[in-house]
Image 1: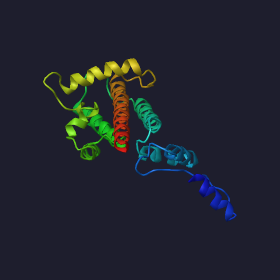
Image 2: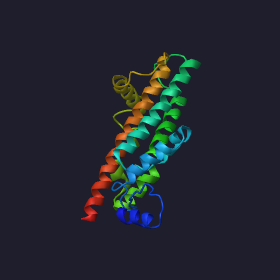
Image 3: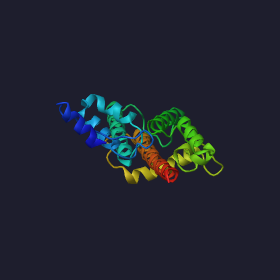
Image 4: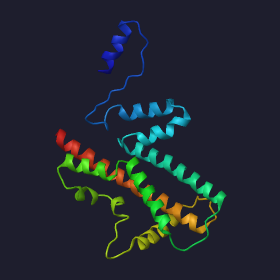
Length: 210
């Protein structure tokens, strides 16, 4: 196909442009990832962030690029909060903090296609219950209380785990630092969820094609 396109351009005396072979049925294959990289590199810097977040989760590389883009955003938010330095040091999370964290988690899930609507669509395509899809990943359960743990207890555990993984926040405020530790933790969690479902999608597509 590629050679035929090249010959057609040459026969008509036209310059040969970059040619990308893509499939609407399976965007993981052929040149779709290369096309995405090309589009990103050709875009002005100020447009790259939004374009990056709008990309479908076609490869682990795309998912990781989204993750890095959002990590920069969280870092900037943390830096700005540190400059303002208006939040007192506390050892617990306010209700307003929980709402902020819920909104952040919802945003990350939407960016990575892990939101409720996307999971329901995936469940319909796979002809299974949405609960079965949610059971494959972690992020849907974060703000669901259980008999074993309250949401506060769960978030406290996440903070401890995140402290071990992230050492690059500049904020001096202990309370504000905990908020951004959790944002990083949520982002990493949703990133792994996206990779998990991508593997499932590729596996199921492979089985169907066979």
